[in-house]
Structure formats: structure tokens, C-alpha cells
Length: 433
Ligand SMILES: Cc1cc2nc3c(=O)[nH]c(=O)nc-3n(C[C@H](O)[C@H](O)[C@H](O)COP(=O)(O)OP(=O)(O)OC[C@H]3O[C@@H](n4cnc5c(N)ncnc54)[C@H](O)[C@@H]3O)c2cc1C
Image (cartoon, rainbow, N blue to C red; front, side, top):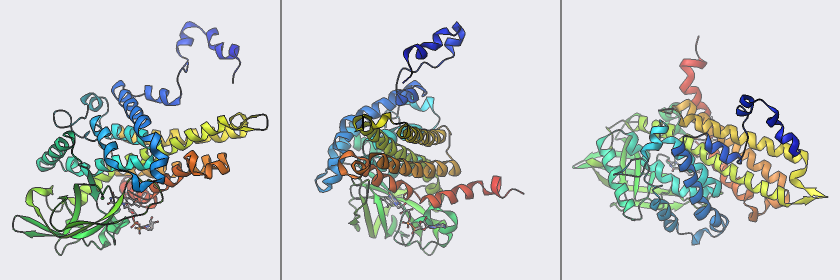
């Protein structure tokens, strides 16, 4: 918008002054990518290329014709590029040592992946990403058993088998309760594990499990007989196992290509080596898994909002109102600037979590709820700018708005995440004398 002679004003600066000016050459995405250490910048480009090629072109069609969507071809394309086996480095998995060396936590790469996939489609992305959530307790248990299962599952994925994982804590009578300590103390946990010859007998029911409909491995949390949530223990349930079945697949408002399915366990005998971590370590393992996964959910929200903003921008550039483009009106520009600021702030908080060697509860919860609320507001604004076109299925903003609503609900509602932040910082900050 600036006249050329003003754009070139920095040429009048001294030699050193010119060196201190950021001459922008790329777009905002490129600029941000270049702030990353180069292995992660490269990784971000790989995720984006994949999403642009395999996810984005089918987003609207899959959302509309869900019954015809077969997740496995997309899954295998992602797995072939190593995107489904990233918790372990070679020879066990496909995590890149240079990525790990340039950022202390594997969370950073996961957040990059979540944003890129979700900018293309929240639903297909959820289908791919929920698998990482299912595998996380195996890694975070810090046990040989957990490592060994990861290694075995990854080798099956790399061999091209239809193998996915899911994470199961939610029960019909315990949703928020198992995401927050005070509620957990009162929770009515129905999933139970009882010692039996050779292992444990599991009984119970989990609901709303992402990838529950396709997972062959489920990290399943159950309380021990006659004890409360403090006895929670994580078990790896395999499908098929005798007594394991799947119930209803929920009809969802958004992120539709990822299923949310009920899982039913009736006297399922799991061998001793399927217990992930010691007995009664499940509550701590669940909390820590959420510390890693909540920033990733924040990144999902950022991705969906970015997708909505990109589509809104395309519309504002292509649509004429009076004698100029929508994008040329200053009041539209102010709205677009505000959306960009909000998006950048949400991403910055997610990336901030990824810079911790060990992400802790308060900062993870903050990223999850800030990004979730911000994303929904951005989608809403995008729809507003596009008028009746935003409301139609064809532009993708209506889908992004439906997709983004879920980020305020799963992994603990945003209210529960705010309480998680308070709980975490109560003694050190909020209740300090
Ligand atoms: C599509 C989808 C996918 C999901 N995927 C998974 C998955 O893969 N694995 C899994 O285990 N779970 C999954 N969930 C479950 C999800 O994490 C829970 O639904 C979520 O934690 C909310 O629990 P709830 O539905 O029981 O809400 P409730 O606990 O019934 O909450 C109802 C309302 O009360 C509020 N509330 C509750 N307690 C408090 C409190 N103490 N103070 C203030 N307000 C409170 C909540 O914020 C909410 O507004 C998924 C859910 C959905 C919808």
C-alpha cells in the first residue's frame, strides 16, 4: 500500500541502520517459520505440504459425505512419511533427532503438525492426531513395558498395517471429573480392574473416545476393585480381545472425520504385561498426558482458525463491494488485523509451552483455553465478514466454526482448564500470604 519511494526509505539509513531493519520478503507464515530452528522449520514445511496435498482438497467433501470416508488411505500416506510414529527415533520410530536437539520437548513438533493439518481440515486432522494421544501414556509412563509396546506398535504401523491408538479416560458418569483433581475425588468411576490369574479383568464403559472406532490399541484407565480414582491404573487394551466391543459412534457437530465412539469392556482379561506403569500410577499419568496434549489441542484450534482466516482473506480479496474489493475497505482491514493479532498471540502461547522441557499443568491449560476461545472468535469474525457466503457450506468457514467449537470442550472444558491453572499455581501464586 505504501508508495515505492517510501518503501525504499530504509535505503537512506546508514549501513548499520540498514542491517537492523527487517526487510520482509515472505508472508507471515514464512516469517514465523524462519524464527524456528531449521530442522523444525523444515518439518513445518513437510507437514504443510502433506496437508495441502492430501487433506485440504477433500475437507468439504469428507465433511459432507462422512459415510463414504475411509480413513485408512490417508492414514497410510501420513504413516509413510513418518508422521504417525514420531515419539521414538530411528530404529524404533521416525522422530528426528535434530528436531529433538533443537527444541527440548517433542511437543513442539506435535504442535506444528496439529496446526498444519488442522488448517486444512479439523476432522481428518483429529483422526490422524488422536493416535498420538493414545500412544502418549506409553511414552510418559517412563517404563520398559511402555517403551516396548510403543516399539512394537510402531513397527506394525511402519509395516503398513491398519493400526491406530486411542486414549480413554471419559466415562458416562465422569467427564470433567477426571480432568480436574477436586472433581476426581468425588467421581463415580465405573471402569474397574480386578486382579485375576495372569493379569486383570477389566469391566467398564468409556464414551466419546476419539479414534475409538478404528483403534486397535487403547490406553484405558480403570480404578482397582473397591477403590476410588486414586487407584487409577493404565492398561493397554487390544482390539480384538474377548469381551471388548464398540458401542455408539456419536453424531458430531464438527471435526466429523474423526470418530468419537463408545467402548465397552465386559470381563476383558488383560495380561500383566499390558499394565502401563505401576498400579495406582494412572492419575499422575493421566495428568501428565493432558499436560502434553492440551497445548496440542491449542495448536488444533490455531490451525482451524488459520484455515478460516485464510478462506476469509481469499473471499475479501475476490469480492467487490461498490467500486473496490472488500479487502480494500479500512474497517475490513481493521477486523482482519485483529484476527491476525489474536491468531499470532494464540500460536505464541502454544509455542511457548513447546519450549518447556517438561510442560506443566498451568501453562498447558492456559494455551488450551486461550487458543480454543480465540479460534472460535476468529471463526465467528470470519463468518461475519463474509456475510451470507460465510454461512454457506462451500467456503469452509462454516465448517471451521463447527470444527473449532470442539476445542473448547474436549481435553477438559475451558472452564475446567481455567480451574487446572488455578489448582497448579494456587500455592505458589494465587493463595500466597
Ligand atoms: C468429540 C469429542 C471427542 C472426545 N475425545 C475424547 C477422547 O479421545 N478421550 C477421552 O477420554 N475423552 C474424550 N472426550 C471427552 C471430553 O474430554 C469430555 O467430554 C470433556 O472433558 C467434558 O466432559 P463432560 O462432557 O462430561 O462435561 P461435564 O463434566 O458434564 O460438564 C458440563 C458443564 O459443567 C461444567 N463444569 C463441570 N465441572 C465444573 C466445575 N467444577 N466448575 C465449573 N464448571 C464445571 C463444564 O465446564 C461444562 O460446561 C471427547 C469429547 C468429545 C465431545
